[in-house]
Length: 230
Image (cartoon, rainbow, N blue to C red):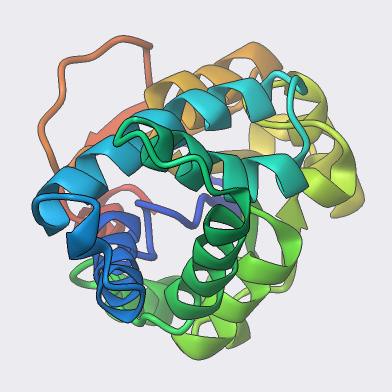
């Protein structure tokens, strides 16, 4: 088995449980702003929000929208579906969501266990498309920061995964060779495809048992399975 020297992790939906933490934060926002007056229930609000959020994030990865716009427009578009045109409210929802989401602390099962196992053996890094300030807050609030030597964000580097230049930048920044590195992530079109384009091995974290859309070097359903690879 190949002997790797540098391990790169995605953060959202790989270590930090984005879906559960996001739902909790959206529920807090829903209650704080009495959004039951607009949406029939929290599920409708969350579903409409995610529909627009996913589309806007795809635009952001392509460089077609600024983060400052994305942050409130996902809420503005969700409100518009219910015939509410209120940018000021959308901005307040966006601000509250960002403040609340980063303090949520749900991580995937065996996150701490696998990081405790890996840290003495390898230098560990985060490579994420998330916004710089929010990703650092998540890592600090979940007590994950101490495991990682560096955190690379697309916002800082200027390229989003899956662009191969973000991988090139991160690998060269740690004075590594790509053949000595491996990327661990949950998103086949972003983490795995990006690693493939760069020529870097990958571990596809697949707790939902998705069908394979991009080739990977290894696939796991639980983070603890990394022990069998590294």
